[in-house]
Image 1 (cartoon, helix red, strand yellow):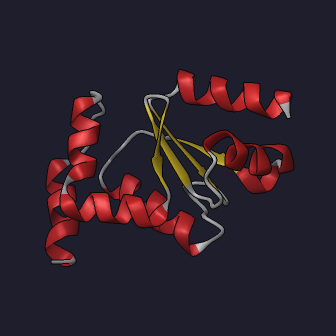
Image 2: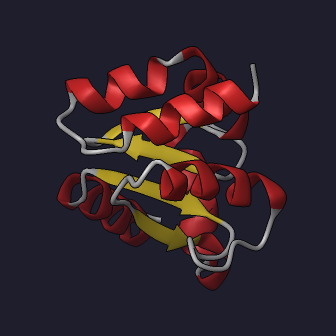
Image 3: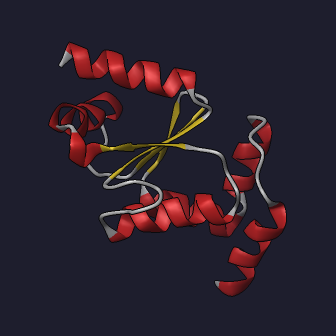
Length: 120
């Protein structure tokens, strides 16, 4: 597990925004991963995706690392943010905008507003 742990730490420290997900941001393999990747893609967030389906060590390792049982998992500037439900709530409340702004992550504020309008 040390190998996966090291790989996870390196990934989240060398990328501003990382989504551990089932599939890729271009081809999500589950609805929850698709929702979070879709929000990030729509908002124009530059993020790295890690396909947990391609590495069982990472798939279990990320759950142990974050002490969070489900995937997807979003990290911003090395900090665990949450899974699909939390990211959805944060997007709709504007908290995700604030988190990204505070961490210097570029995103399309108009797109974020459109998501809120469509779900308001």
